[in-house]
Every structure is written in C-alpha cells, then in structure tokens.
Image (cartoon, rainbow, N blue to C red; front, side, top):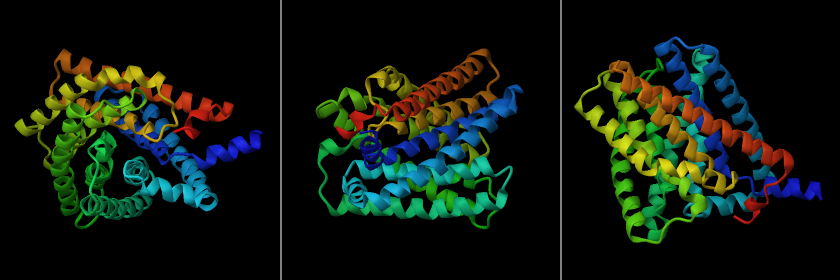
Length: 326
C-alpha cells in the first residue's frame, strides 16, 4: 500500500513546488541584505542558500523521474491553461540560484543564469503566443497567469550583478517586458476578481502573487538606476497597499493543502516584498521604516518555515491524498 502511495505521490508531484526554491532564494537574499544593513549573522542567509540548492537538486531529480515514468501526466499539466504557468517556477529557480552561488562559484553562476535567461524568454514567448492564438476563458485569469511573463523581471535580479557582456541591455529588455505586461495582466486579473465568481478558499492565498510584480519591478529599477526616486517610491508604496489588501490571505494557508498545484509559489512574493522593504529602509533610517523591514523579514521567515515544515511532514507521513484529488 505504501509503495502505491509513493507512486501516486510521484505521479501527482506538482511543478509548483519549485516555488519553494524561489522562496528560499529570496529569503537568502533578504537575510544577506539584513546582515549588511543591521550587522546580523551572515550564516543565516548562507544556510538558507544551501537549503535552496539542496531543495532544487532534490526536486529536479524527482521531477525528472516523474517525466520518465509519468510523461502523460506532465504533458497534461503542461497543456492546462493554468497549471502551465507554474512551469515558470522551475525556470525562475534557475535564474535565482546563481545569486546564491555567485560569491562561491562565479563561473557556475554565470552559466546557470544564462541558461535560465534563455529559458525564461522562450517560455514567456511560448505562453503569450498560446494565449493569443487560442481564445481564453475569463475565469482562467488567475494570479498564476503572472508567473510566465513577470518571470522576466527575475532576469535582472541576479543578472545585473554578473560581469557578462551585454547583461545590462538584456536586463533592460527583461525589465521592459516584465513591467509592461505586469500592468496589462494585473488589470485583467483584477477585472476577473471583481466581476467573476470568487476564487475557491483553498487557492485564495495565491492572491499574494499579485504583490510580486511591483516588488520585483521596484528592486530591478533600483538595481538598474542605483537611485530611489519618485517612480521607485510609487512602486514601493502602491505595492504595500496591495499587500495590505491581500495579506490576510496568509491566514488561509492552513486551510489549503501544501500540494495544490497553485500553492508553494505564494511564498516568493512575500520574499520579494521583504527584499524591497529592506532596500527602501536603507535610504530611510527612521524607526517606522526600520520596523517595517524587520517585521517583514521575520514574518516571511516564519511563514516559509511553516510551509516547509508542513510540506516535509506531508511527504514523510504520506498524508498527501488531497493532491490526488486536485
């Protein structure tokens, strides 16, 4: 019986679990910045980075086995208009991991980032062409739609720090595509949320994905320009308002199964917002901004730790039946 359960778990393993790698990478970057900003222990960030690498390798090997054993299941997942978006979580993980590796293995980081950038541009093009070539149902316009295209905003996050020829222009291209399509897709998704039936409670935590694009846009804009001007401030504060609107959805996490296809990716937007607050607090030394930054850091760390613990517990105890019913 346990053997069959393990087969079932492998067959229904969602690609969205790579969102956990994204979250761990983002949390690593946040703790590194906190270590510089507040002189905190740098080993916290590095330990999280090691965990991200281990998680990526484990999930990649496991999902590769799934592709070999259950290719029809993977094909079905890739052809679904919603679940296909979560394949971006794997590519974004490939884009973010070089940031973890850069201080120790710079050449490996450069090669990995280059592969990730090519994959991200290709995947964004593929999904957009698919959307334009086939009529889309309005109820399919969910927050997960942001992942394939807005994933291009992750290209400059690490790429802007690499000593590669032409990387600045590539970062500009990615920033332009990601920012403009973020505005377009956010408009479409907000329209769907306002005028269509509400999302099921179990997937409502994914509304936090809506905070990701502007947080990334803020960080990329600051990274490319090196300044914190009016435009950066508008991005930052508007995104905080979006977080206030949907932040309460975090409380719905216990009501959702960790293995829902749409699940793990909600943690990365939290780290994106946290990183942006840490950057902003570097320019504003007042108590309010410092408290905001450190509060976001600890809340995000606790949420991700809880999700990680619950996910591992579900796997070890094999209590993942809700995944099969997804």
